[in-house]
Image (cartoon, rainbow, N blue to C red; front, side, top):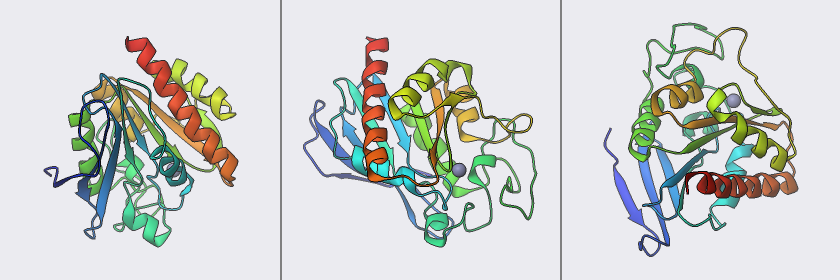
Length: 235
Ligand SMILES: [Zn+2]
């Protein structure tokens, strides 16, 4: 699907820009939105996904705080409040078609979990939400991608290229860091796809079940700190 809208909300000089884009639509036609803060031409590009599972809303609050913060120089931060607006509206893990989007990405996809909360969908990348995020990430080519979930309270450092960044982020968020994985290989996950196909740092960030405002603020600050660290790595 083409990038369907570009609405410039602020001055679009390379050094200071904010923009809103609709990167796709859900099964029911709800827009999937992305917000840019920082320099769109930066070499350091961070994508933060606030929500994939509709019953895990806390990461949206982190994204909301991040929209008001200033990223480091030479950094673009793309903020996606949710890739699953239908699940969010319904309070369900899955999208409107009952698919677990974190089993629907093409890397190591296999059909599994029909009738459960972990249904892979009928084929790899069958869902419009998955397709929208893949197209957007292929275009942005992020340095790092963070995907917020709940409720386990851990930064997942399953993917070796992401371990150093993940340990730092966890320390700054005051969470543990460890490989979470699945019981066996993780088929069809977003972070697996980003790691394998985009060669980017990909981190699943599991917030706890209950997230007070202080933890939301701390998480947003930790993301900014990670962005600064990443820009220093690429400098
Ligand atoms: Zn989740």
